[in-house]
Length: 317
Ligand SMILES: *[C@@H]1O[C@H](CO)[C@@H](O)[C@H](O)[C@H]1NC(C)=O
Ligand SMILES: *[C@@H]1O[C@H](CO)[C@@H](O)[C@H](O)[C@H]1NC(C)=O
Image 1: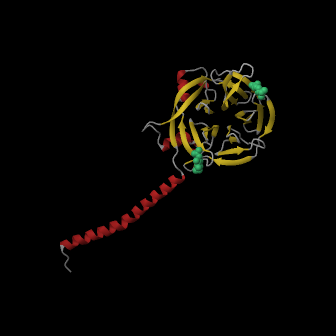
Image 2: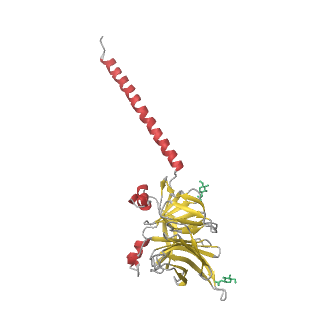
Image 3: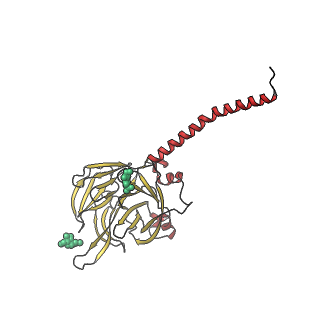
């Protein structure tokens, strides 16, 4: 058989076409499947929004206070009728643990009650006329009267490792060293429900000091400068606020105590004036901050978010 040059070329082209169809179709189908998988994953695990912050005010803070709990409140003197913005603040470390009522504007400690040195203080929160405070690792908890800061009851919380404490107005909300947040009935201290904190499907441990802000649970992640905005129903991280630069700024300014500062820990919210406060352990300042979206192009990429905000990336926890 004589095959002309022309038909040889045609044959070659046909073979090439068949080959390419055979090869590319599975590739295209594979790509489509991967895209579908990615889209389903994103539907199930939507990306959190990323925020930075502006400082709008700063207030003096006892640089010897190893802050473990912070909550905004307002108190009025019954005789003079003068009212004060205050923080309920708890401090940790054995021998230095206390519960305090602090004047927001001056940093002055107005009331204080020290814990025996066998206790390492953790979070504090006010619910009704009671202040609840938990401790680290011993399961000991305390109730104080909100007016005089007097100890009214010692309670066994049953917590193996209490860290942060806040309230949604109904429950005591407790964090510990794990990825779980527990909602407790304040009367019985029984667990009502638990959420698992997750960012795009990855479990996030080490939420420490917390605050409920506009129906979200905000918590700073221990050993990071990130605040997680957590959906209280699902546990999903819906936003990350990058608080980077606050601590470094204090060090740069050389404020008294700034060389001994520990990590960011402490979020408080003034619901009336919509003010958000943050501080840290042994920080000489409390900052009033306004979260804001990153300017376009300035937001960290997801690898950076994981590096900065997910403790497990460091092999910790
Ligand atoms: C002010 O008076 C009210 C009513 O008598 C009382 O319940 C409250 O504890 C008092 N507040 C302080 C700070 O003493
Ligand atoms: C939390 O998630 C639930 C379920 O997806 C949703 O209905 C609710 O609006 C979310 N809450 C907040 C504060 O985002």
